[in-house]
Amino acid sequence: MRRFDFHSHLGKTRSGDDNSCSQMVEQLSAYGIEKVGIVSLSQNSMRENNDVIAAAMRERPDFVVGYADIDPKDPLAYDEIDRTLGDLRMNGVKFMSWKHGYNVENCPQLEGVVDAIARYGVHIQIHGGASPLCTPYVWTLFARKHPEIDFVFTHVCGREFGTTCIELVRDIPNFSVETSANEEMDILREAVRVLGSERVVFGTDWPYKPTNIEVDKILELGLSDEELENVFWRNAQRIWDTPNA
Image 1: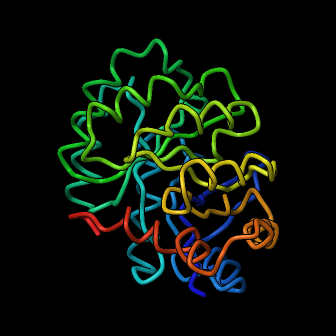
Image 2: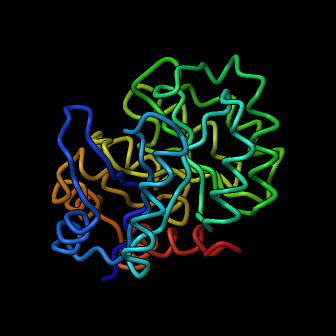
């Protein structure tokens, strides 16, 4: 069965450990993963983060799907959207309010930035959980405003907001959830039950989480072969299938 990792990273970890594109490909390939979507959050600026990903896309275009790091508060956000999604052909945008230090409930810059991203047709993924800065409600308003765009909550918004997240997006068909780093099996099962296997996307959060555990927990959900195909790769392929793919 094919496996696409929808959500991982490249660049130094929070503990200072370095990594490389070749290391990532080798370690993920060992678990049958054929493609990976990545963002970098470890550099000193949006542009430096995005340059790390652009280099990986050039090194392994067969394996790497690149996402842009965008800070809506940065005066250069619009220029970086055009550079990453236009010139560099990245396939999505990651918002990490925890990393960039803003509360999504009180960030008026988000609306214009999301509108600018929507013009490129790529998906928007949001770090969910782990911080009161990463609450899910506001993002559902953007998803309703832009039904043509796929939105994805990573980590099913964690144990903190997992159940709330599932209920919030239940009736928003362009909103999916991603599985990495959420080890609460009841939340993962509830996501599949409520949203259907077509809106649950497999990820590993490499290099932060053990890849074997991230794979095995999906296999332990009791899904049918068709449901596993959806979670492990079909949903990622659908979301990636944009003008920038």
